Length: 378
View (cartoon, rainbow, N blue to C red):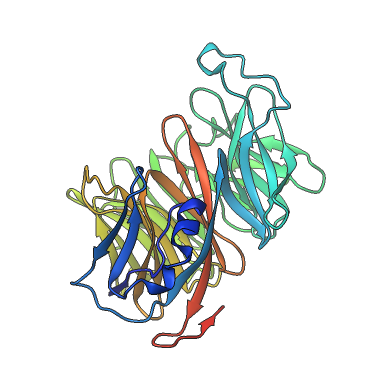
């Protein structure tokens, strides 16, 4: 796997303005970084192959105190942010904060349009159904979040709670009408957008950790047995995959490939394979890997990598090109973060959060053919 340093590496709009005039003068084999005091550092990458970047940055827009979690279209993101139209939270521990509501963020006009609000609650982690008709999101204040489903046409919804599942521990879309996850009652559950909710057939017991469905396969493991399994929902049979300590499972949009975050002693690896775990390819390795997401056309994968435990360099955002086997560093010195792609692949959002703050950045990407100078959009 080849790595290319970006010709323009930046973490904020201010840094982009600082470097904009000289970005074209950055030499191949270098990464430009800026510390909090404003000192710019150029890092040599003598051990890495030098070549024309497959991915380069056009610009980065930063949104303070906003969490981007999904995209409706290329100019409309789904976000969570403080709603100052509501009263502050009633709980004493949260009394200095406003509730967080869900909004459409219109990128071209920099305007917010309210989707859903609730008094004394933080709404977040919103994810659109594949057909963009429903929204899956969380409701929280203190304690574990509650998952809820909203019909974006009728604006009616329901929570994934109560008998017979005891509540949803996790939730993700299986298709346009179906949500799956691990339940507090044990095993996995299945919910539909019409409000039906019940245990998943053939997987209705056990303390599950990962639950992710793609097509007719449900990938899962348990707290005590971290090896990854694949349940065929048609036959009811489970097959062990060659990942004995899986911490994350990310099926490709077409369901034909997998990205698996695998623990290996004190390290984590991000592994690309087919749905059976065959022909595995390690694309990243370090102390921790998070924020994994596929581009909609599945030509790219984004992830957050911390190379060494306790490293002062922090975490970095990378984009991996599946066709060229190239990896491009997008941003450095991140806190905890997750990522999401716009439908065209031209924008990549990453959200950072710390103990008391959070922010989002939208990275505008240009694509170039290997060894070519003309940028192209896939």
